[in-house]
Image (cartoon, rainbow, N blue to C red; front, side):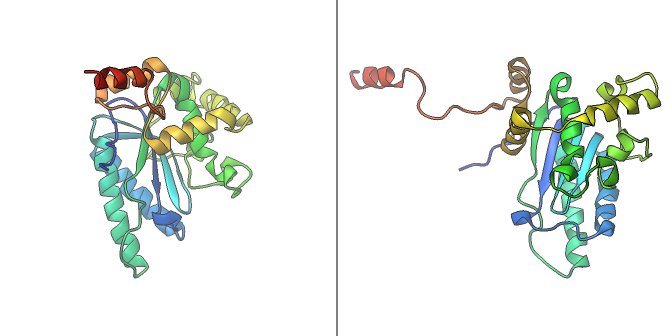
Length: 238
């Protein structure tokens, strides 16, 4: 079966997940993470992709980003993945695949889900039981978005900028978003859309991005379509 083509469109945010092959470790220490971030900065700039949020976990990465072109994220991730594999294999005297095939991604409706994706990504170390406060994890964007740590990797999204009139007000409003966790249907919807390459948004948004990309970006209903018996009977009868 042919693999499903990813959908991407200029100006529409995407949630990107890159996992280690068979969930294997892809970052053994902070030097590895720093190497990955260095190439992420390089290729995000080269292919004009704005990075809004990220987290580097032991065996996977989450990114929230907006491309300037329909091919920007694909070019960035291919270049980044290739460079990091060369580094990792040389560093640890190994060979073969490191990543779990292609990265996964989904288009994100800004108004409804963008800030939820910020939280989903930066709360990852909490859900994994690694820390109790996202501020205690250095390899995510939380310290930048919530605490003002400076990095040239980060490009704040317009909705983030709208959280306040100045940096102090924005950070205060942003930290308030983390008073509760991502759970229930919201958590399920984010995971399903991301893992299956669907669009995360309402029906109007999904219809719009399907028209833009020419790809089906909603869950297909299982089973035969309504009216199939009648259509089959009519076909048999000629």
